[in-house]
Length: 139
Image (cartoon, rainbow, N blue to C red; front, side):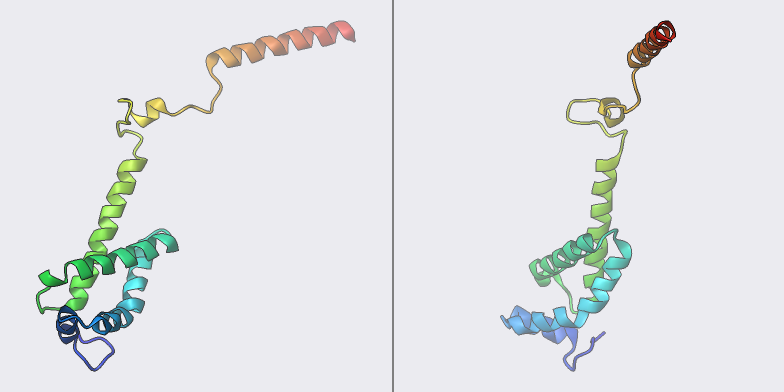
């Protein structure tokens, strides 16, 4: 895939490897709409999409030496996809109620229950009974 420009992707990658930063800028401009759209469709928020988009390009630049002159867009989108998978796994592990917390117990055992405890319920019932008795005596 050559993208929108006259220069093929692999040639821009070669130019970037030789030190031409403008070549990478062209690649970013070429793939920004499609890549960002792809990421937006697969993430929960615009903020997450922006972070993954930036991290995709950071990883692509760091690993440009490993890129073989195959299909640049497939390589780039695979990086983005892997980042999204990693983020989902991390989020799922973080959000799991069965996950063991730092204190050793599962989160569902550690987190406070918003429902009143049996002691609170008994105290409320006792207070209601006393208030009702006091109101009967007053009236």
